[in-house]
Length: 91
Image 1 (cartoon, rainbow, N blue to C red):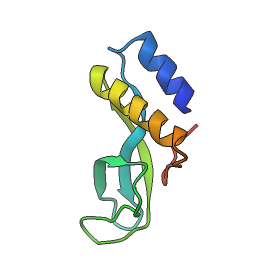
Image 2: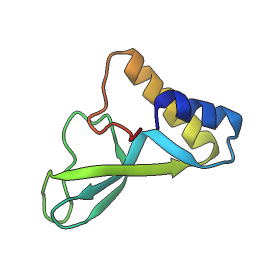
Image 3: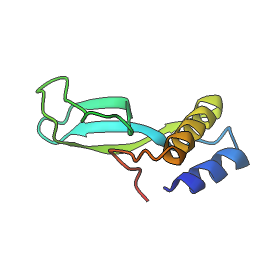
């Protein structure tokens, strides 16, 4: 999902869950541990709390209402400032 799609979905209905452009569920490729609501824009790689591996991938996370609007706004501000997500949202 692109940022503009997330913004459109959020503005259309804030009570409907949609994928967050600012965070996701990071899943360790080595042991399968999950870190919910991990920052897609982190300056350092995510590290597994169980095995300390940095090998992993980001799955979508969903929010509702105000939190989603806040995260969409934060992601848009970061992108406008020239930041790119370390773990981009799936298109």
